[in-house]
Length: 113
Image (tube, rainbow, N blue to C red; front, side, top):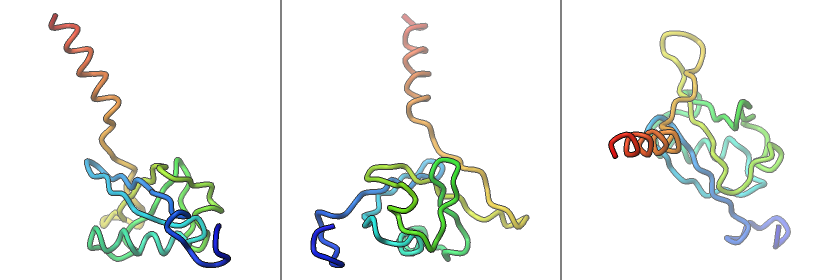
């Protein structure tokens, strides 16, 4: 990082946070802890950080680890899952797969012609 300990705009990365039909973009820094990113997301979704988790692929992100330590890069997709109020667990990742919807639309267009 440029500027020893100082986070500069050119050092920032953009994370895509997906949940159901929503995608939000969050600016972060590789050396930031996940908890700091969760605090930004908590403000956006008006939730307490203890009521959701962030997933990268199949990995639950560790609040105390940095973005860099968890191998997350700019434009990577992070899944947001809420705590299930009926149990002690968390919901499964659920998001709208736009690639799949596009392929289905193309198939329907071919079938219609």
